[in-house]
Length: 169
Image (tube, rainbow, N blue to C red; front, top):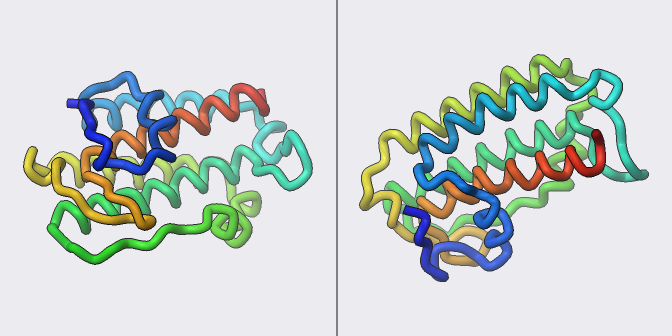
C-alpha cells in the first residue's frame, strides 16, 4: 500500500517515508508503539536531560516533540479524511519545544502520554476506509493524503529514534 504518488506528500517528507519498512499503517503504528516504549525505557536516566550540544533538544524534549507532532499529524489526517477542504497551517516545532517544558516532567509521564497519543492515532486509522486513506488535502501549503500522513508519522518517529541512537547514546 505504500505506493505513494508524488502529489500525496511534500518532498520534505520523503526522507521520513523512506525509513518506513512496514506496509500496513495500523500494524506499523502498533508495532512501533511497543518498540519505541521499549527503546525509551532503555535510555539511561542520566541521558534523559542530556544535550549533545548547546541549544539541542534533550531526549525528554524529543519525546514530547513526537507527541505534539503526532497529535498534529492525526488532526490533519482526521480533517482530510472527513473531506475538510480547509488548508491546514504548518507549525514551528522549535517554538513548541521551548514552551512545552518537557524537562520539568517525569519521564514516565511522558511515556504514558506517548502511549495514549499513539493509541488514539491507531484508533483513528482503524476507522478509516480505503477511500478515506486516499483523500487529499492541504497542509503546510502542500498536498498530502491521509495514508501519507500515516507513513510520515511512522517515519518521523524513526528519524528521531536514529538521532537519539547516533547523538545521545
